[in-house]
Length: 640
Image (tube, rainbow, N blue to C red; front, top):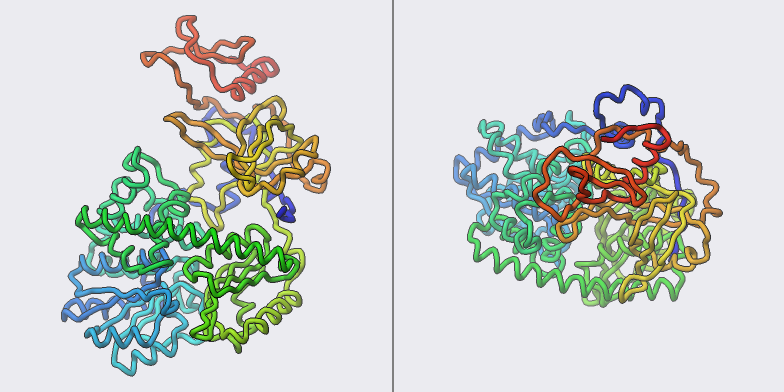
C-alpha cells in the first residue's frame, strides 16, 4: 500500500558560509549544518554526575551494606534486549565488587514487570535485596508486597511514571521530576549504568568502567531511545569496543555472524539494531531470556558456542512465526479495510505474544496508523497487546483514556503494552478509535518525510559518505539523513529477484548515473514510477563493501511523480562543485599493487584517469570525474 506522505525540508541552507575562507580543509557544509541543526556533540567524554539522580546515594549505600555483610542480592529484569543487557551489566559489575548476586527474569507468560509470585520466590531463595532493572516504576502493589515481606527493593527504570512513586527503598528513574540530572531519555541499561557508575565512583574504580560500554550500547540501541546526549556517548564509545570486547560470549557471537572481519570491521548502530540485538531478543520472545544473559556473563568459550547455536535457532523460528502473523494481520486489515480507521487493531488466539510487537511496528510502517496487535489467551480470559504509534499520537495517553477496562498497561508515547479481558476488546477498540478521532489532528496521519537537503548529485562520493559517518550512531532523534533529488530520469525498473515486495532501478540526474538503487517495500510504487516521465526521489546514502571494494548505494525512502510534488518547497542552489573543499579523498582499485607517488590526473574523452609517468593506472569514478571536469573547464580549476 502506498503511504500518504508529505515532504518537508528540515532546515534552510546557509549558503554564505560555503564561500568563506576555503584555504583550510573543512567538513562539507551539509555535514556541518547537520551537526549544528541536531545539536550533536562530537565529544564523547562523560560530564555527568550519577548522584544527580534522585535516590542514588541511598541505593549505593544499601548495595555496599549488602556486599559487606554478604547479603543475597537479586537483580530482577525484563525479557527484552534492554532488560537482558541491564541484568548482564549489573550482574557483572556487582560480581566484580564482590557481591553475592543472582538474577531473575520472568518468562513472557508471566507478563512484563514485577509480579508478587516471583517476589515471593526470591524471598524464599533468601533474597535480602532486590534491584529491578528496566521495570518497576509503576509496580506499587508489588513493592508494597515486598515491604510486607521485609524485603528491600531498589528500582532502576526509565519508563513513563503513570502514577505515584512506589514506596521502595530507592527509586532511580531519569524521568523523576526531583532529579538534578536533566536528560530524561536513558534506556533501562543506561539507567543501570548510572548506578554502576555511582558504585565505581565510590570505590575509585572509574578506570574499570569502559569495558561495560559495549553491553550498554547494545541495550541502548535495541530500545530505540533517542541517540543524543549521554545515550550518544554510551553508544559511540560502546560500538568502538565491540571488535575488542572483553566478554567471551559477545566475541563468539560476533565471530559467528561476521566471520570474515568481526575483529576489524567498524560497527554501526545498524549492526546492533538489525543483526545483533534480534538474536538476543529471540530468546525472550520465544523461550527464556535468561539464556541470553548467560551468553553475556559466561566465560567458557565452548559453553558460549552452545548458547549461540540455540539463540540462532530461536531467531530463525522467530522470523518464521513473525512472517506468518504479519501475513495474517495484513489479510485481515485488507479484508475489513481497517486502514480507514484511526487505529488498526488485530487480535487472534493463534498469535504469539513474543513477536506481536515486531508485527505491530511493521503494520505501522506499512499503513502509518497507530497499531495494536493482540494475542488472545482464551484459557485465561484475557488478551495481551503490543502497541506502536505514529509521531504526535501518544499511545499511553490513549490507554489512559480507557484505563478503567485495562488489567494493566505501561510504556512510552510511541510503544506500549497492556492486558485486557477478552470481553472488553470491542469496547476498547471503539473508545480508543473515537478518542483519537476527537483529540488528534488528521494531519498527523500524513507521514512527514523530513528531507535534510536537496542534494547535488556530485555529492554522492566516497569522501562525503565517509564524512557522514561522523553523525553516527543513528537512531531516534538522530535519524539517518534523508536527501532528495528532483526531476530524475530512470531506467531498468524491476522487482527484486523472487519478490514483488521490493524494487530496484537506475537513476539518472543531470548526467550523473546511479545504478541498482534499492527501494525496500516499494513494490506498490511500480505503477506510479512506470507511468511517470520524471520522478523525485527521497533516499538514504549507504557506503558498502562488496568483495573488499567500496561502493555507494542510494536506498530509496519515497518516490513521487515530479509533477505531483510541486508543493515541496526547497532552497536548492546550483553550485557546480564550487562548494567542494579540496583536497578530497577517493578510492580506486589499480591492477598493479606497486604504485608509488607522485601520481597525476589526466582528463580525456573517457573521463579522468590517474597516471604514473604518463601510464594510466586506473580511471576514477565516473561521477567524480564529471564534476572535476566541470570545475576544470567552467571555473578554470587546475588539477595536477
